[in-house]
Length: 270
Ligand SMILES: Nc1ncnc2c1ncn2[C@@H]1O[C@H](COP(=O)(O)OP(=O)(O)O)[C@@H](O)[C@H]1O
Image 1 (cartoon, rainbow, N blue to C red):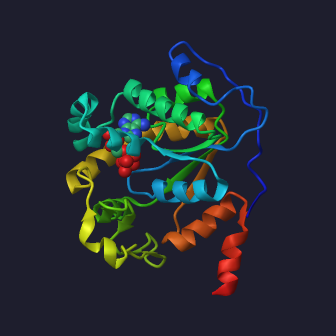
Image 2 (image 1 turned 90 degrees about the vertical axis):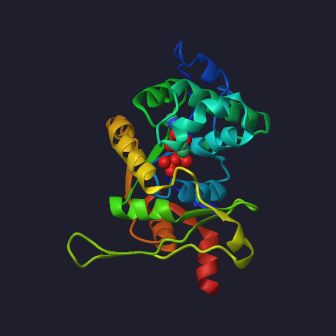
């Protein structure tokens, strides 16, 4: 069970702009007096947005919506949109605001039809325009900005693997680096697949060294200003990853003032 001490359930506020009207119409009903969390994960490629967003989504019972996943679903459908997007994504460029907003709106609409309330967004917003549109249609409670040094980010992207059968995400990179002070150790052990997935691992086509470097460059140029956008609005929580998943997860829960009863039982039983 999760005991939640900080994220306050707020009243919905809807302020649609002309451009964003179609988007807002697809968001959950504004009549709701109380609602679930509406959080955003920011951070460079490879920082672990997907990993921590997925864990929080499970813990808090809200959908984890990754625009990168929505884009990859389009690519694997091989439809007309896939043809338009394939080169952009494989070169590490961002797709247009209009297309990504359309994909996200459809995903939110489908979620609403299933009774989903709240969300944890991962990979959106990535431009100031996307952030302004989102701000215009709904109230984001909290933006978690995950941070990690660049050499570790590149190693993590190059180590990413997915099981083509079960969809499980793994990482074969073992990161063991000294901090800038020459003493602090940054250790991130690999997250290896179980034996039945080992032979089915695939690598994302945009996780090659050149494309990862281009995605990082674009992040600094286009997405970094989004951090400032939320910083100015007092919504940004900065979080430097201290190491591997178990350590980082515990520290993240502390930073969010979330107390996870089940984790406590697991460590007591260990
Ligand atoms: N909000 C967005 N705006 C524009 N393009 C996006 C957005 N989200 C995802 N994409 C496209 O999908 C690709 C993969 O996204 P994602 O899985 O989030 O990558 P990353 O590992 O770089 O965070 C991006 O490089 C980009 O082409």
